[in-house]
Image (cartoon, rainbow, N blue to C red; front, top):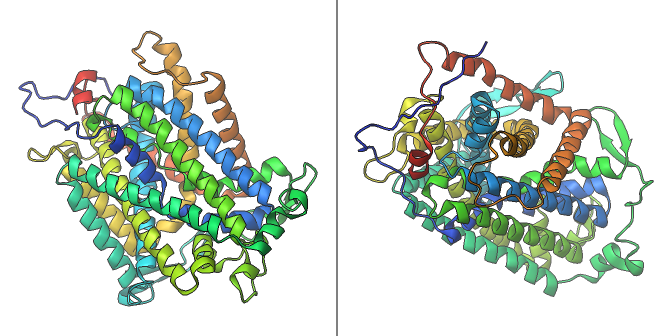
Length: 529
């Protein structure tokens, strides 16, 4: 039997321990939601999605499904956040609703891959687009090439096929991750200020893309995507249309219907919209969190997803959805075969010719920089909360006396993210946890139902809109997507489950007799930090 941890307080009796500073208001909290969501996905994933869907209508439908699920998730999390405004957010909700092992498994996966892998991947995306301005920044320019790990197959997984060592691209990624980690050790107000500036800049950049697309509309693209009385928009979107998808890596081709193919492409759209939950990790540093957390979740997700849907419509007014991979022109290649899947870059090049690529690269540099800052700031708070519960390294649970930030937790996160950059494994690992992330969302929203039953009298300043129908709808949709991914994309599902389950023996070792720590702070102390 895995031992449980008894809930007691670990706050020093003399009350001299530093506490979190509530330095973020509603604007900063909303900027955290939006900044963590907007990375580089919206500029790239529509290409892969469109190759699978083959229909402008289904591309928009896929993003509408993503918007529906994300906003329902945010509204549901708002109740949990207002009820338990503590550092650690989703980790705390899982712990309180389902038990400490579920919180640990989430935190374990977050540190091992979800947060650190995303930081590494976004850092490498930053370096890639930095190379547009400085060609010397490239993943082919090695400073220290340790070697190549060949690919090998393990069931549905394809492991390896990665280059290990230090090149100018991952050096640039490590440098910016280091800079942002250092700035976040100086206090939450500085971290929030950076987030506010860069989130504002990338929202303006997205609005700019929408405006440019409206001005630079292409008659060929409009005719191809919306012509014949919108017949072309609805092409291949009928109930009886069968869509070809490949099962697994190199597996057989399966022909699936509308609901299944839209579920398959959620790998792109749903997780390009992910990390909106990061604001809950920083609850101990938000002023009036019982009001500002639910509001920031609702406003932030709604604005970002409205911009995402607008961007997809704009892509369709400048580039035909369907294209030819061998075509010599941007319009000829279409959305499906934009060079390197960089749909937004192709759109900007179509509008501004030679300067379009650099304008788009600058926008993505701003976007990825702000995204990394939000991820670094938020993630460290989860490891802090885990440490307070005796489920992570003890030093991660200490706050700096000078800046009231979890400095050790930030540097632990930094070290693992940088190691993933050097290993070249970050992208592969992220593919593996996509399924696991969705499972944790289902468990957390399921926890909302559990807490309504087990703690009916708990203070709930905000209650989830549409409860129980909307949270139940989220669970139904997410379970359907998980089932489809298990069937048709096993390379993304089983490896993620294995990574999560590896946390079970780690939890057993961490909580073995004689080592188990205290469960955490009482409500008042946790709220203060």
